[in-house]
Each structure stands twice: as C-alpha cells, then as structure tokens.
Length: 310
Ligand code: UT7
Image 1 (cartoon, rainbow, N blue to C red):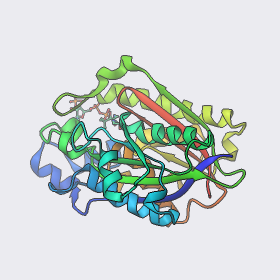
Image 2 (cartoon, protein in one colour):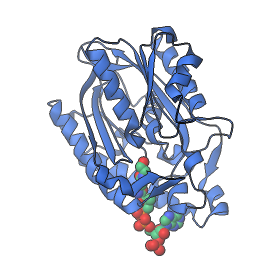
Image 3 (cartoon, protein in one colour):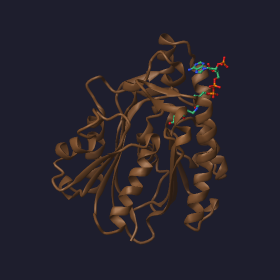
C-alpha cells in the first residue's frame, strides 16, 4: 500500500507587491528582478494574518477536497520557519482551530524543503499502518523576517500556504520513491538571525547541482527514467534554478510547474501551491508521474516521485 495525496488546497494573501512597488523603496529594478529571478510580483500577507491563519485556510480546503472531516485526521504536520511563535506550534494551533480531536501535532523545520520532509514523514506513519490520514501543510509568512532594506533577499520572498491530506491510495498510485538530505556545512549561506541572510551565489550553485541530482536519484530508486516523467514541480525559488532541473530531465517547458512570476518564493508553501495551480490548468492529471523537488536553508533538500491520483 502506498501513501498518496487525497486532497489539496492553498491560500494566497490578496495583497500584490510588484517589482515596480519595490523600485520605490529600494535600489532595484523590475528588469533586474525579472531577468535574474523570473519574479514579476509576489503576495504579502496583511499584518493581522499570521502563519497559522494561512495554514488554517489551506487546510480547510484540503479537507474539503479530500472529503474527510477534521476529526478523522490522525496527525498534523506543519512545515514552517515562520511560526506565529516558537510554541505552541502552528500545528497545535490548527488542531484546535480545525477541531481535529484525535490528531497528534508537530511542526517541521527544514526551511524551503520542509514540505518534502513533511510528506515523507507522513508516508512512514501511513505505510506502517500507524495512522490513516495525515494533514501536511507548508505555511510561511516570510515577510515578517525579511529586511526590506536588503535588496539581496527582499525581492525574492513572499507569503502563502499549501496543504495536502495524505492517506492510502489505490494500487500503483502514490509515493513511489523519495530522497531527503542535508549538509549543515552550508548553513552559513542561508540563515536567520533577526532577518533572513543569504549568500545568493553559493545557494544558487548548490541548488542547481542538488535539484538535478535529486530528480535523477528518485527516478532511479523507483526504477524509472527521465522519459517516464510527465510533470516536474520544483520549489519556486528562481526561474533559472528551476530551468536547470527541467533541462536535466530533458522536459519541455510546458511540463514544469511555474508560479514564481506571480507568487515569488514562499518557501515550504511553494510546491503545494504550484500543484493546485497546475491541477486547475489541467496539466496534472490522474496517473501522471510527477517529480517534486525542493532545496533550502540548512542546507536541506528533498525530492519525491509520485503517481498522481487517489
Ligand atoms: O528558497 C531558497 C532561497 N534562496 C534562493 O533560491 C537564492 C538562490 N540565488 C539566487 O537566486 C541568485 O543568486 C540571486 C537572484 C539572489 C542573485 O542573482 P545572481 O545572478 O547570483 O546575482 P549576484 O548575487 O551575482 O549579484 C549581481 C549584482 C551584484 O552587483 P555587483 O556586485 O555585481 O555590482 C548585486 O549587488 O546584482 C546586484 N543585486 C541587485 N541589483 C538590483 C543584488 N540584488 C539586486 C537587486 N536589484 N534586487
């Protein structure tokens, strides 16, 4: 029996901040941001909306989509590096808000790879028959740890959340293989003291190498090859990094999820948000072989090969 995704939802803040808006508050340009990152605009949450609220909105949609009630959830995993506070965790706040009476709850901290870590943690509980339904959420309010005077980082990051309900799926569908990894020696390249600090060039080099390698590794582990891949969902960090992964898999442009131009980089939320988008465009269909791949601070990375459908 494989664990898979049986419901999905997302939340995006309404407020749009364009590159032109940023030109007014820092020494940058629409042209630079577009050509170096692919970002045209991003979503920023209003002051009164914190990470738990965004996580809640996405979770409600995922439960509806899965057609199960909050009481049936056994475990809530929230991947975030921007919780409302260190504790109680966002997952515990959700347990109450959703009325998920029997659910255990914990947050997962693996930066932009957090959603991959969450899905793979959920898979272990489901496939060992310990739990049936696990709610996995990536939710971030990066705007609250962004230094709006640092053009190296402020143009990249954004807010949002994506949620999936995971559970047992029919034969042949669900997670086929995965890879998770970490390299603490690169922690100095992307970290938070008060605000996010980043050595963009070092993170870029790591991301290009790791995204491609992890995609190939999960295919090998599943006994598949590049030609089997129907669709790639990379972490939406930078279009040039995403393109390098796509080229490594020799996929045409239309076979890669792309939301970075509209939503920027919302860290652990970017992969589930992009999946919802591409389900709506009809690019992801039942029985497609999807490769998801992410990287982030830690340094951390993760990839999953999944056969779509319940
Ligand atoms: O979820 C993981 C999060 N992190 C990432 O994904 C980051 C990965 N790295 C990147 O995406 C890229 O390295 C950046 C987009 C951050 C930067 O692009 P780059 O092509 O690596 O540029 P660079 O850092 O080599 O900087 C080129 C120039 C520099 O000026 P000098 O030193 O050549 O005079 C920067 O100061 O661009 C300058 N620059 C900017 N100019 C206008 C840096 N940020 C900006 C900006 N607007 N926002």
